[in-house]
Image (cartoon, rainbow, N blue to C red):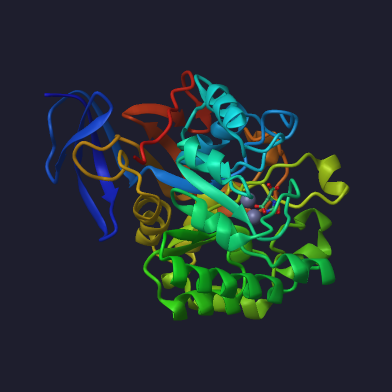
Length: 405
Ligand SMILES: NC(=O)N[C@@H](CC(=O)O)C(=O)O
Ligand SMILES: [Zn+2]
Ligand SMILES: [Zn+2]
């Protein structure tokens, strides 16, 4: 007899099966195609039950930028959007690039996160601190983005990081000459990344790949320790959208139809989908801040894509659960016995209109404002506890740091 049994239609990388999962102490203890017995049974009918979705690229801000987002508002937005674990990007103010600030970040998270979280460390000529930090992943900027910090010697920073490196691949010199950041800025940086990865042979994830040239270069290099992520805004929005709405300024920039077509033509080769949730106030955006909020639309946009035949529901499990766990070595997550009982429950047929005023993020604006989407996250479970149901955040912050050791 389990504490809790969840029954319904489970989605794995192979497909959908009707069955039930037995949960005790927040962990998956039994998986069955029949109906397990539980003190409490949560029957989820026709909704689809995905393993907890993981977003490996999220800017939670907080510290001196609480007006943009806090740990609470950002992680509430995560579980509202169906995300159970977020990777906290370290280009905060102050940036997380020394031991004292890393420890301060760790305390800032305690008891305030509504989702689980991985802690990042920004590497830029600070190798000793990076090695001593114990961070869950490491961030390197090859060119400046929000916060303005970037590596003067990418190879040395990449070589120093004692764990998986996520890299912002836009070439600094090209950006200085051509601030509009054409595809060449990304392609040049990605080619440098691949040469370094070939030499150093250590795990690396290329952030927000946006161009056909970069995705072709990565897939051609075929290095098993090199992964990459693509964002929903680079899949569903274009440079034309930015020309019509200046708020859509983002680094790397939204691209032309050719690049977008190549991303979709290579969709099955994309290991990870991540939001690059980058909240700014409307005032900051009007002053040219780069970044787009994405936590509360990313899953719904992908589900809408499933309904339009652009991708399959199993793609979402592969690119937002399985591959993030594999690439970043997450030990306590996964749809298997002994792993945390995190689940993202979606209603694939739910039609709704994007209304940013109903968002939990402080960035109450969206490129998809007013758009009708088919598909929505309707319930989020974290270690067997319902933490979001029908847009309501239920209960207190339960999020804890993931285990990548
Ligand atoms: N993507 C952006 O345009 N902005 C991000 C930084 C980054 O991911 O480069 C931010 O932190 O605002
Ligand atoms: Zn970036
Ligand atoms: Zn980012």
